[in-house]
Structures are given as C-alpha cells and as structure tokens.
Length: 92
Figure (tube, rainbow, N blue to C red):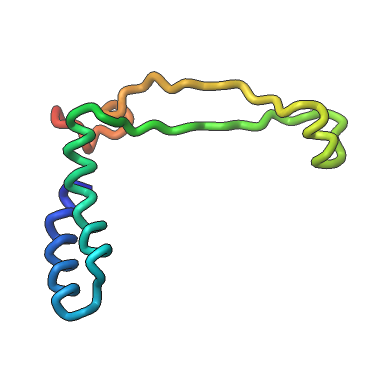
C-alpha cells in the first residue's frame, strides 16, 4: 500500500483538479502512507483466520447443525509474515 500511495495520490489529485474525485476520495488515497507508518510503529499487525468445518454425522438440516453445537477448534498461526510472504521481506 505504501508504494501504491505515491502513484495513487498523484492520480487522485489530478482527478480532483478535473472534478472527478471528491475531497474525501483524495484523503482516502493518503491512507496507504499512514497505514504503513502505523504498521512500522507496531501499532497494528496483519492477522488472518483459518476456519474449517469438520463433517457432522446425522445432521439433515441447518437447525440440527446449530442444536448439536458448532464444532470449532481455534487455530492460532505462529508463522512470521515474512516467512509466508518472502517477497515483502527486506532480507530477500
């Protein structure tokens, strides 16, 4: 997002000049810069959730499924973001 900020803000400002973008849309274009800054300051992190629904025996309707309880097992990913997405890693 940070890299796209530079071209995005330029296009937004030119479009705003010609009346194709509102002030709010130009401000939205600036969000990539501030998201990057806050990410670098460890204010927030990217996280993801993986959910799998195991098969349930003897269930014929959604109501039966809910009555039996939703079998959810939490999974917490401990993988480092740069290991999963090496293209954004500074090492590589």
